[in-house]
Length: 443
Image 1 (cartoon, rainbow, N blue to C red):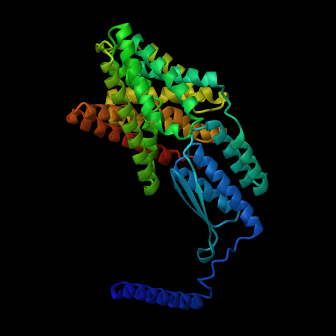
Image 2 (cartoon, helix red, strand yellow):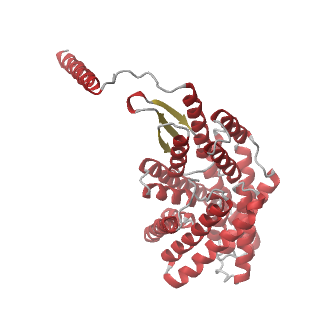
Image 3 (cartoon, rainbow, N blue to C red):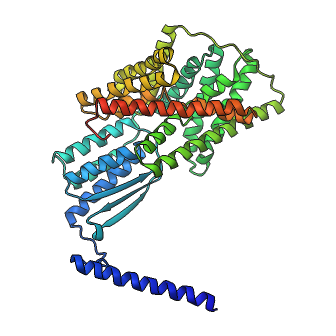
């Protein structure tokens, strides 16, 4: 009994001593440190409500932590608020007011899909508030209206993009028409699966596993129907939309900008997605062998002519415009950014090696995006994200995991190291572009 009482008595003594010291410190500087009453006026509370709403919306539509915090800091200063912000992939913490009289808010946010059109609308609201066209109350209504607005592309067009993107990826990976057909079928089924699981929140957690299973199952079945086919290429192209290469790149970008909590959480989230996809692929291949589907024969890689690659990049840019929900008028800029990224990295890799080549492609597309954003007064992400998606190293991460599942540790380590180095190369290109031609806006 004495062993329990003494630590508790000691804890109470320490708390009493802390309160005495804190009160003395507060009296010496003229404030009451134990007074936690909020000091925000009604006008400031309206401004804080707007800042929280737009921060939650930016978080939902795919903005990284450093851009969210920068945007919220800028608009808070314009509204006369002293704000501090902390963003992670699943939450947003905001504190308004002076140090000892802060009002703190915590918003739990589920990561959403990238929506470039809504991101542009939110950017216009920020600009209108900063210039005084809208007050915080009006801006809050605008943000809510933007969030409630339905997606601008139809379900049929979205499903078509799920087909086009994997089919184009199979050509990038050196596949033939057989791999392209298999990847397109996989993309269609995965798109239909995504639409169905949106209505079932709990089942949605199985999406990555089911997506990997679908892609591998379709690849093996098509190999049995069409004849010689690279199952690895067809499977990889089929899950290309699900690969977290962009998430991994954003995570390293956040780590490099000292947003350690968000970067670490996002990095582990990307690894979890990779493992889920790999598990689904392993199940698909294992089950299909059990039911005696003919074993696929690996096909030699096809050397794709340059004009086919250019046409594929152009068509893929159409699919990315739909999948990222960009406005139709942004398609020419997205297509140009995709061309710059792909061929900049391709010829850069031939001249300087793969890592410097990817860094060059990243630098070119980021610089062009910054220039276009300054000229058109729109967020840099509109053209940068679709361009970077052609450079991100998700396929290498998938190959690393596949090698581990096949107990090929040496190739797994090599592919994993290459994945990280390419992601770092992309981030380096972004940093150099930001230093040479800094963006005018936070978004």
